[in-house]
Amino acid sequence: MFRNAARLSQRATRSTPVRQTAQRRFNSSEAKPEWVVDNEFNRERAAVKHHAASTSDLWRKLSIFAVIPCLIGGGLNAYNLWNEHWEHWDHMAPLEERTEYPYQNIRSKNFPWGDGDKSKNYVLCLYPSI
Figure 1 (cartoon, rainbow, N blue to C red):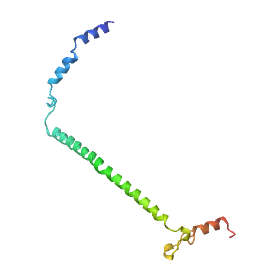
Figure 2: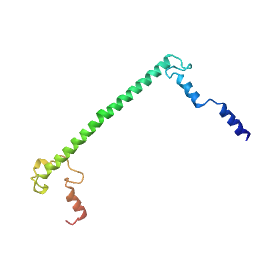
Figure 3: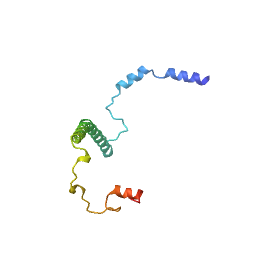
Figure 4: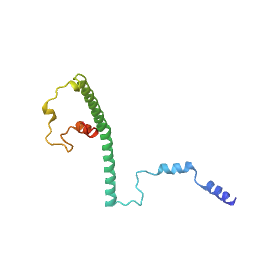
């Protein structure tokens, strides 16, 4: 009980919020505190902070105004190429009806499993009597 009474009396003697606001109004935010020393280290640190702020602003602007439009343009280009590819395949003859030329199946090196015809060797492995 005594603690509560002491706390209430301390609250009553404290400055009111209006007085705190008035005191804050007269304080200048531009003035440096007295503990800030103007030396080479602090000047260099301020320059680094300024450079970092301007650099991050540059990258933010590049991301918004350069990267996003490039991604949209690249996506549209890929979509158009995809559609052109399948339109081209629609008017071509089926694979079974196309002419196979000898230069389309040039093998300069034998495959480890034989002549390179996987399906024939696979069938021979499954059905050795053939």
